[in-house]
Image (cartoon, rainbow, N blue to C red; front, top):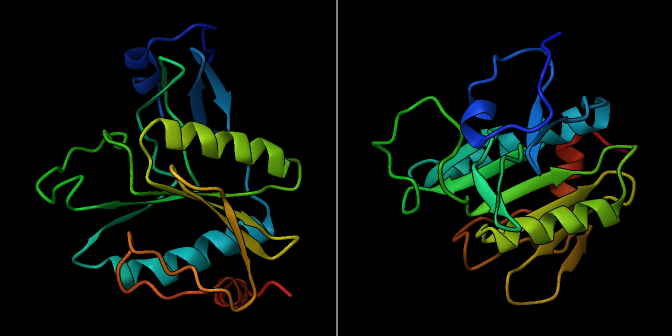
Amino acid sequence: MTQIKSQLTLKEFLALPEGDITYELVNGEAKPKMAPKRFHSRLTLALTQLLTPWAKNRGEVGVEWAVTLKRQSRDWVPVPDLLYVSYSRLTRDVIEDEACPIPPDLAIEIISPDQTFGEMSAKATDYLEAGVLRVWVVDAKAKTVTVFYPDAHPQTKAGEDSLEDSLFEALQITPAQIFQQAGIP
Protein backbone atom coordinates (compact mmCIF):
# COMPACT_ATOMS: atom_id res chain seq x y z
CA MET A 1 0.00 0.00 0.00
CA THR A 2 1.27 3.46 -0.87
CA GLN A 3 2.05 5.74 2.08
CA ILE A 4 0.30 9.09 1.53
CA LYS A 5 1.24 12.22 3.43
CA SER A 6 -1.56 14.01 5.22
CA GLN A 7 -1.62 17.35 3.32
CA LEU A 8 -1.30 17.23 -0.44
CA THR A 9 -1.22 19.89 -3.09
CA LEU A 10 -3.29 19.32 -6.21
CA LYS A 11 -0.11 18.55 -8.16
CA GLU A 12 1.03 15.99 -5.56
CA PHE A 13 -2.38 14.35 -5.49
CA LEU A 14 -2.60 14.06 -9.26
CA ALA A 15 0.90 12.56 -9.34
CA LEU A 16 -0.03 9.70 -6.96
CA PRO A 17 0.42 6.28 -8.55
CA GLU A 18 -2.67 4.40 -9.64
CA GLY A 19 -3.55 1.44 -7.50
CA ASP A 20 -6.34 -0.78 -6.25
CA ILE A 21 -7.86 2.03 -4.19
CA THR A 22 -9.47 5.11 -5.74
CA TYR A 23 -8.89 8.33 -3.82
CA GLU A 24 -10.59 11.73 -3.82
CA LEU A 25 -8.80 14.92 -2.75
CA VAL A 26 -10.81 16.56 0.05
CA ASN A 27 -9.39 19.41 2.14
CA GLY A 28 -5.83 18.51 1.16
CA GLU A 29 -6.24 14.85 2.10
CA ALA A 30 -6.45 11.75 -0.07
CA LYS A 31 -9.67 10.06 1.05
CA PRO A 32 -10.33 6.51 -0.14
CA LYS A 33 -13.53 6.06 -2.13
CA MET A 34 -15.72 3.15 -1.08
CA ALA A 35 -15.43 -0.05 -3.07
CA PRO A 36 -18.68 -0.56 -5.03
CA LYS A 37 -21.01 -3.39 -4.09
CA ARG A 38 -23.19 -5.45 -6.45
CA PHE A 39 -26.12 -3.05 -6.97
CA HIS A 40 -23.76 -0.08 -7.23
CA SER A 41 -21.79 -1.88 -9.92
CA ARG A 42 -24.96 -2.87 -11.80
CA LEU A 43 -26.29 0.71 -11.68
CA THR A 44 -22.98 2.08 -12.97
CA LEU A 45 -23.11 -0.35 -15.90
CA ALA A 46 -26.80 0.37 -16.62
CA LEU A 47 -26.30 4.13 -16.59
CA THR A 48 -23.26 3.79 -18.84
CA GLN A 49 -25.24 1.66 -21.29
CA LEU A 50 -28.15 4.12 -21.32
CA LEU A 51 -26.10 7.33 -21.54
CA THR A 52 -23.31 6.35 -23.95
CA PRO A 53 -25.44 5.93 -27.11
CA TRP A 54 -27.20 9.23 -26.37
CA ALA A 55 -23.88 11.03 -25.75
CA LYS A 56 -22.37 9.97 -29.08
CA ASN A 57 -21.48 13.16 -31.00
CA ARG A 58 -22.65 15.25 -28.01
CA GLY A 59 -19.99 14.62 -25.41
CA GLU A 60 -18.25 12.04 -23.29
CA VAL A 61 -19.49 9.74 -20.55
CA GLY A 62 -16.85 8.84 -17.97
CA VAL A 63 -16.92 6.15 -15.31
CA GLU A 64 -15.03 7.09 -12.12
CA TRP A 65 -13.21 9.88 -13.94
CA ALA A 66 -11.67 12.29 -11.44
CA VAL A 67 -12.55 15.99 -11.83
CA THR A 68 -10.42 18.95 -10.72
CA LEU A 69 -12.72 21.44 -8.99
CA LYS A 70 -12.72 23.94 -6.13
CA ARG A 71 -14.62 23.38 -2.89
CA GLN A 72 -14.69 26.20 -0.35
CA SER A 73 -11.78 27.85 -2.22
CA ARG A 74 -9.62 24.72 -1.94
CA ASP A 75 -8.60 22.20 -4.58
CA TRP A 76 -11.07 19.34 -4.67
CA VAL A 77 -10.82 16.22 -6.80
CA PRO A 78 -13.98 14.15 -6.49
CA VAL A 79 -14.46 10.95 -8.46
CA PRO A 80 -18.12 10.77 -9.44
CA ASP A 81 -19.45 7.31 -10.23
CA LEU A 82 -20.27 8.65 -13.70
CA LEU A 83 -20.07 11.97 -15.40
CA TYR A 84 -21.09 13.49 -18.68
CA VAL A 85 -19.20 16.40 -20.21
CA SER A 86 -20.43 17.97 -23.44
CA TYR A 87 -18.12 18.78 -26.32
CA SER A 88 -19.12 22.42 -25.89
CA ARG A 89 -17.39 22.35 -22.47
CA LEU A 90 -14.53 19.96 -23.23
CA THR A 91 -13.72 19.89 -26.92
CA ARG A 92 -12.98 16.67 -28.77
CA ASP A 93 -9.37 17.72 -29.39
CA VAL A 94 -8.50 17.46 -25.66
CA ILE A 95 -6.79 14.09 -25.51
CA GLU A 96 -4.64 14.19 -22.38
CA ASP A 97 -4.93 11.24 -20.01
CA GLU A 98 -5.72 13.26 -16.91
CA ALA A 99 -8.45 14.26 -14.51
CA CYS A 100 -11.32 16.10 -16.18
CA PRO A 101 -10.05 19.70 -16.17
CA ILE A 102 -13.46 21.43 -16.17
CA PRO A 103 -16.76 20.99 -14.33
CA PRO A 104 -18.87 18.41 -16.18
CA ASP A 105 -22.44 19.02 -17.28
CA LEU A 106 -23.58 16.07 -15.12
CA ALA A 107 -22.13 14.23 -12.14
CA ILE A 108 -23.83 11.03 -11.00
CA GLU A 109 -23.35 9.60 -7.52
CA ILE A 110 -24.82 6.24 -6.50
CA ILE A 111 -25.50 5.89 -2.78
CA SER A 112 -23.50 3.00 -1.29
CA PRO A 113 -24.95 0.96 1.61
CA ASP A 114 -22.82 2.80 4.19
CA GLN A 115 -23.57 6.29 2.82
CA THR A 116 -26.57 8.45 3.56
CA PHE A 117 -28.74 10.53 1.30
CA GLY A 118 -27.76 13.53 3.43
CA GLU A 119 -24.06 12.97 2.71
CA MET A 120 -24.75 12.68 -1.01
CA SER A 121 -26.96 15.79 -0.93
CA ALA A 122 -24.12 17.77 0.64
CA LYS A 123 -21.73 16.47 -2.04
CA ALA A 124 -24.28 17.39 -4.73
CA THR A 125 -24.36 20.94 -3.36
CA ASP A 126 -20.55 21.07 -3.47
CA TYR A 127 -20.62 19.92 -7.10
CA LEU A 128 -23.13 22.63 -8.05
CA GLU A 129 -21.15 25.34 -6.25
CA ALA A 130 -18.06 24.18 -8.19
CA GLY A 131 -19.80 24.70 -11.54
CA VAL A 132 -21.32 21.29 -12.31
CA LEU A 133 -24.64 21.95 -14.06
CA ARG A 134 -26.64 18.93 -12.79
CA VAL A 135 -26.14 16.21 -10.22
CA TRP A 136 -28.06 12.95 -10.06
CA VAL A 137 -28.06 11.03 -6.78
CA VAL A 138 -29.20 7.47 -7.38
CA ASP A 139 -30.69 5.52 -4.48
CA ALA A 140 -30.86 1.75 -5.09
CA LYS A 141 -32.95 1.09 -1.96
CA ALA A 142 -35.63 3.67 -2.77
CA LYS A 143 -35.26 3.17 -6.55
CA THR A 144 -35.12 6.91 -7.06
CA VAL A 145 -32.99 9.48 -8.83
CA THR A 146 -32.82 12.89 -7.20
CA VAL A 147 -31.86 15.66 -9.60
CA PHE A 148 -30.02 18.66 -8.16
CA TYR A 149 -30.09 22.00 -9.98
CA PRO A 150 -28.00 25.15 -9.38
CA ASP A 151 -31.08 27.42 -9.42
CA ALA A 152 -33.99 25.27 -8.16
CA HIS A 153 -34.90 22.80 -5.45
CA PRO A 154 -33.93 19.15 -6.01
CA GLN A 155 -36.54 16.88 -7.54
CA THR A 156 -36.82 13.20 -6.70
CA LYS A 157 -37.93 11.00 -9.59
CA ALA A 158 -39.22 7.43 -9.34
CA GLY A 159 -40.81 4.82 -11.57
CA GLU A 160 -41.90 6.25 -14.92
CA ASP A 161 -41.05 9.87 -14.00
CA SER A 162 -39.04 11.37 -16.82
CA LEU A 163 -35.46 12.52 -16.30
CA GLU A 164 -35.92 14.78 -19.31
CA ASP A 165 -33.96 18.02 -19.01
CA SER A 166 -33.43 20.87 -21.47
CA LEU A 167 -29.71 20.61 -20.71
CA PHE A 168 -29.65 17.06 -22.13
CA GLU A 169 -31.59 17.41 -25.37
CA ALA A 170 -33.30 14.20 -26.55
CA LEU A 171 -32.25 12.18 -23.48
CA GLN A 172 -35.38 10.31 -22.48
CA ILE A 173 -34.92 7.86 -19.65
CA THR A 174 -36.75 7.08 -16.42
CA PRO A 175 -35.68 5.64 -13.08
CA ALA A 176 -37.69 2.51 -13.96
CA GLN A 177 -35.54 2.01 -17.08
CA ILE A 178 -32.33 2.48 -15.08
CA PHE A 179 -33.30 -0.01 -12.37
CA GLN A 180 -34.72 -2.50 -14.89
CA GLN A 181 -31.50 -2.29 -16.97
CA ALA A 182 -29.53 -2.88 -13.75
CA GLY A 183 -31.68 -5.90 -12.85
CA ILE A 184 -32.50 -4.47 -9.44
CA PRO A 185 -35.80 -5.84 -8.14
